[in-house]
Image 1 (tube, rainbow, N blue to C red):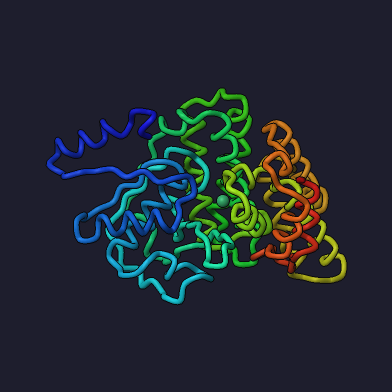
Image 2: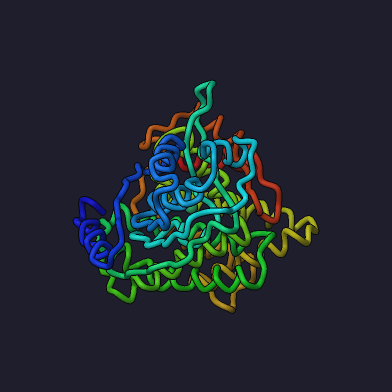
Length: 355
Ligand SMILES: [Fe+2]
């Protein structure tokens, strides 16, 4: 936002309205140290936070708004790391996303990275249902400024989140309404994003799809793509959306195979999961109503592979990942809320196919 010369007009506008306004930058994927420094600098001195930027900036704003009013460091409150529960007290905050992807403007969590005393690194969530912002500003001109190498992975992160929420065992009517509509919007608009022919209507729809993905995932949870992506991101700094885009087709191929196998053995839950993938395939425009559920879920996977080819994403090895790292990432990964249990072997199959 600084480099795009968008920050100064915002600050000047706020000051002209009588606010005392200042700005902080956060690095890609904010660290616990950054959040602690921001919270310490502003504790008792500010009354509202505005998050302007991509998912990392919004996560930093969300975590800052949550940490200014409380004692201790953010790591004390992170899931799986700290021993304290955040009670949800926070400063008012407004989210203004500049990319269309993570849906952080509609989620209950902020992803924070850091390292433990033993040197191992983590990416963990600071989470509370009260962390959803007080207001969301969707300016359709902002994502149009992002270069294709940012816009495409961001949209694929949103697509991953929508598909994972749509095929989650925790899905419910409200999350379904958001997830399937978001999938439909991306099915219509992804080609324009890929070809850099997106007009204002395209960006509007993709921004809504991204926001729906954040809300849907907060309600229904996620699946195998994000059950692996966070662990890859903890090992090597690489853009979250890019990792999700790389994993997306193979993770859903492995998920669909596992669901079909279990459904074929009489697992009724797996049959529900498979029917949800088929419905997602129809929503995306990859399958039609004449196809049965096996055909529609296979058509979904083929469409995802086609999207990945069009996106021209690198392989994980090009991001520096090694066989040894893949093995350790697989051991830490899971299918999260998938209708069948997916574990190390499934994650390993996905990772090998993407390496
Ligand atoms: Fe994501």
